[in-house]
Image: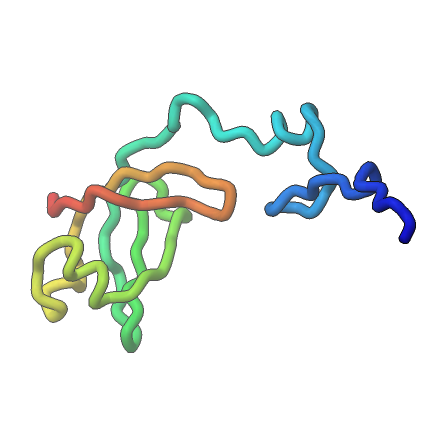
Length: 105
C-alpha cells in the first residue's frame, strides 16, 4: 500500500475557498475595533409584512425589514409602526450592515 502524501492537502478558507496562508488570513482578519455609528430612521411604508425605513439625515439610504420584528425591537404595537422615528447602532460587516440597540426617538 503506497504512503499517503498529505503535502498536497492545503487548508482552504471557509469563506472564499482559497488556499490558506499568512497573507490570506490577514485579508479576512476581523478589525480589532468594531466601527459603527448611531443612525436615525423613520418608517415610511408598511407593505405586507415588510417595513420600509429611510434614514432621516440621508434620505437616499433605505432598507426593508420585517415589520413585526422591528415593532418588537422597538417595544411598540405593529399598528403604531408607520411614521415611527427610531435610532439604532449600525456596524458594517462582511455580508452587510448589522443593526442593534433599537430605541424610539
